[in-house]
Image 1 (cartoon, rainbow over the protein chains, first blue to last red):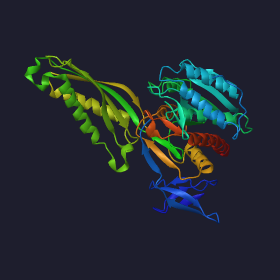
Image 2: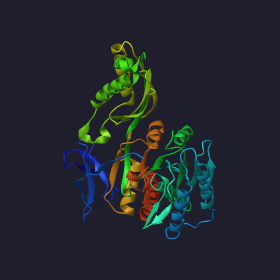
Image 3: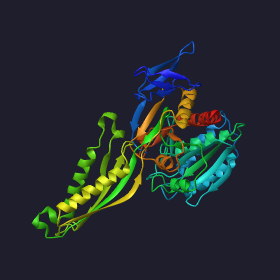
Image 4: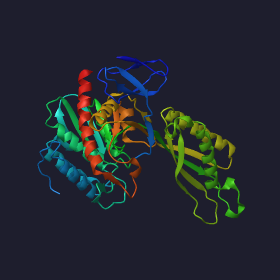
Length: 57
Length: 381
């Protein structure tokens, strides 16, 4: 299914079997969003800070 | 430490999983000395019921669980840095060299794959216990040369329980050699001193490389460079005739390794034009491309979904400043991959290496559920 980017209105592909907490990235503006599935099954995209850095192993 | 038959399921194999890791930690296995541990793991894989258990020409150990497609590689390494650290259990932690990097991810992948042996679903997990990751990478290079049949790969390295590692910077190792005419040290002039000239050359390189920095996006997206070694002079009464500088450069995905080495060549040429008495040369010792995996790629999604279903969120995506075996596999064979494993990466290579036993056991569940996720994705195409 498709969703609209809350930031730039770009089109974001969301898998049909998506689960709460999965992360999608807008291909146009590059922002990350957490998928929140609401009670009626509607999908909401919430901006998420999901990237971090670490040293090498 | 004899092998014995194990009937594995979620409730009965935790004791075995802890014992397996403890035994692995007790077997000190710095790069080049993995044979004892390799032999032990081969025995364990046979005992657990893995098929096609084998050891290749460099000492990597392999075993397969399940049948049919997709083919999933679970890749870990069995060597560590030195020195040996005493193995102990205390307050829910297991201490020892490799507890984080990377015997706990390796052991967890073995146990998770063993749970797949009796699965009725299609899918083959090939556990790859590699040597020499902390050395020159003999293990991963040999695996790549064998062109393994694989649809997906998961690397077992410490990321933290709810984190997936999606990026490693590239790596260039360069040896810079500067030679000049030696004179009495009391002359005090730089053009007759290869060490001082080499430092000059290094400063020019560092200044140029700093222009490629993209600080607004974090350290991962910068080019960084360090002197990893220096040889020159004997501390006596004559200026150093020759100096070798070993330079370590880390490369973000936005920059091509080839472009950087061309830039270095130009700096060395200019240096030679400006220093009539000296001669500088450059040798690229190795070059590894960076890797950055999309969050929507199948292996990252499978691990994310597995973490969410097994432990709950939120999940974070880690970009490592260093370079890993994943760089080589992805750039050579293009196999979709991501890296995951228990343990705090900041404890890697320290004298205080430990893993929380609960995290280790939970990571087994994450790896195991990731197999289901990958198989399900493969079936859906």
